[in-house]
Image (cartoon, rainbow, N blue to C red; front, side, top):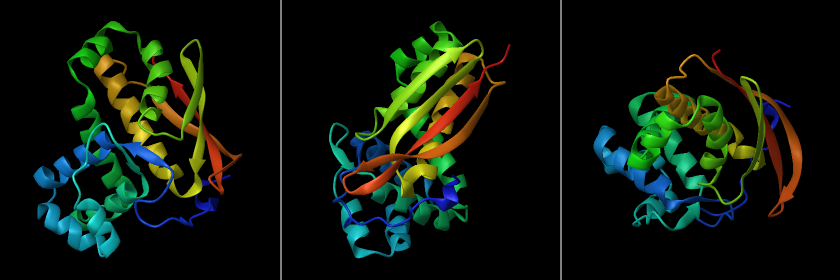
Length: 209
């Protein structure tokens, strides 16, 4: 199955989806918008062009709280329009900012201590911990780490893949394993959650010799 064959309907009102992400993601998104988006918060609000989304982003986001993931994806589309970037390209830029801000001192030390293989095994699960609906399984065979991300609603699969790729790539780069590849190998139906179909995305990370 290809990502363009996935369902696109999102049946919940803004802020009401049971698929949630940690407030850290929203807090860093708002920081990025204030400091890095031309026109800042006002430009984002105008580009959102939806009163419900505008009200959602008017709130204060707490890093320890959980929020509907869908508005964050819509903000990526809106902010991409502001800077003239395609959606996927803007998501990579924003995800890079997220990784850089989120890798605190302790994690930076671990990046230097742990092997690239250990990181490739752990990082997909670490990234999934930002979401309350994703489960990751992974295993290593020599220089290859294979795994699967389960529980993904169709409309967010590609966004989740981009965010995950960016997180893994930056962690491995900081570890010195720049010459690696990350590929999404397959998509398959993985049952239902909250009344909608969810999918499993299989990945493969190949590390340098």
